[in-house]
Length: 150
Image (cartoon, rainbow, N blue to C red; front, side, top):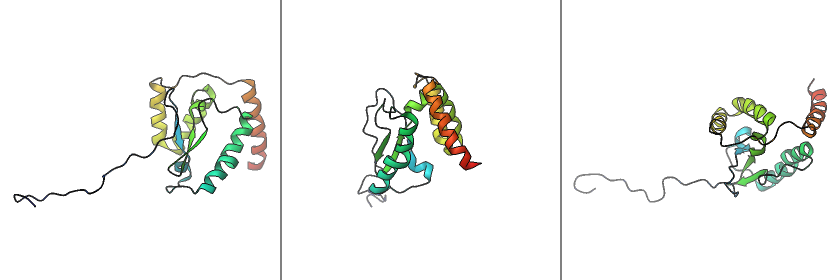
């Protein structure tokens, strides 16, 4: 209290910046939080991160793309104990962009809006379309999954 006024002093920073993925920002790369999709707000333990990276996410991705997914950096990044998925290549593919933007509205509407802004501002150019390689893998994935669902 000084001169009849009460002052509040903060002894530590009020906010801190969360770390970002360790990749070059030129060209622009877009990452999506895997934790938010799963509803996990806490960091994932290293063993869980590795299981996701090698098993579920990495294995599926390697199978679909025959290991040719690494054009713009590592597909899965760990930052602050949370997993982030690089969706840049998907957004630069005509079919991938349509599928992802449609799916994102149901998964995370706020992220969907941010992605739509990037697309409208022409921050992400389309550099590939649907080729025979992609269609073969997509059909084979569909044929494996659909019998189990129906």
